[in-house]
Length: 374
Image: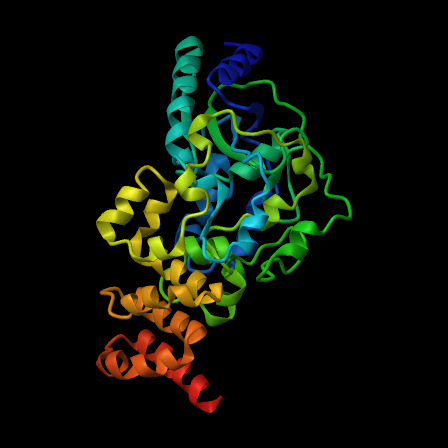
């Protein structure tokens, strides 16, 4: 299977774009990653540190790899997701997570492409969709699919910012495409819109301040300084992607599995906060949201409720003060202190004295100190 046939087959499988680069050449991405981890900017994502040496270069993971076939699928929403941030009684789930898990959708098709290629050429192949220590975004840039913008995400001149990536490594020596150059220019839109100032400089991300990291990867209580800036974002954040001017070229996703489920486009916070574990699993079956679990998700939901300014949600918060999960109880305390200071004081006698979790006790102490001193 020659290069043209490989690309044609990829497109027939529904991939929006497919590009090729050498997998065995030197590159700078490995040293940038080492600096990122060395400075602790990866936060609590210990797996990045544990797999650093293998992640630095494709051949560090598979020394026989010669070429990388990078595929992409467009998940463009067809609308601006930013206005949803003003609907404070609703939760905002990142565009990529409003329907099927892209890992499952893409990997099935990428395996089909790899099998056909291996059978036709006799070459060895391995496929990856964010499932191994492989840096897909630098490979996509090297292959000419786009460039890593100032927000560190991939930007394409043809498709904007809404692209899922996958990679097929192979022992075959394929004709590479020309690398893409940076077209960000003087634009700072993605840096300036970040509500938590997660970019210490252009092209540098401090994951510890990123709402996507905080709502998805971070376990335990979310630091207080980031709670109010989270607004009603309950899973991920699209701000830096959505504001990119190159999205004027983005199209609506052709793959129906990436079209938003209506119930996830603006779910009511009151309904989400009432979910038990079984209901959470049912609502988010086959969704990326499912992987963070009910307790971490409700932690995020209660922060959004605390930011809503909607007193109608106070009974929902009171119900969660006795939740079995400490991360849920703690954020219920915080939300109640925001929505109903007097109610927080009344509830303190019922719940605070019996609280055994140190983090939740800290929340009660912080709220009550703020209320009594005010």
